[in-house]
Length: 56
Image (cartoon, rainbow, N blue to C red; front, side, top):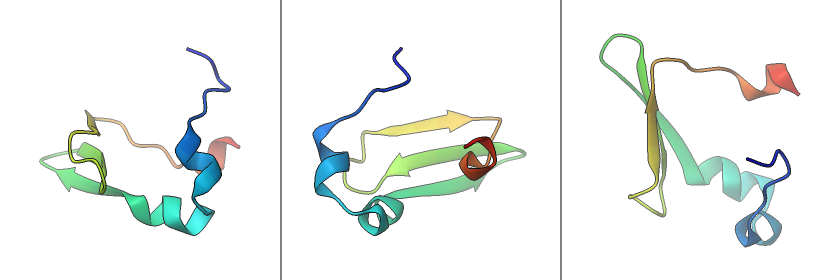
């Protein structure tokens, strides 16, 4: 996968809109779900969560 992958929505929406578009849930013991509030079929589940700002 390319590290430079983009889509049309990132250019059209502001950073605030993008921050509000995605949400996270903590379920069970140490399990996380991140989902798209506009596309309910777009989600992922993981046992690991990292702060993106720490890796920039």
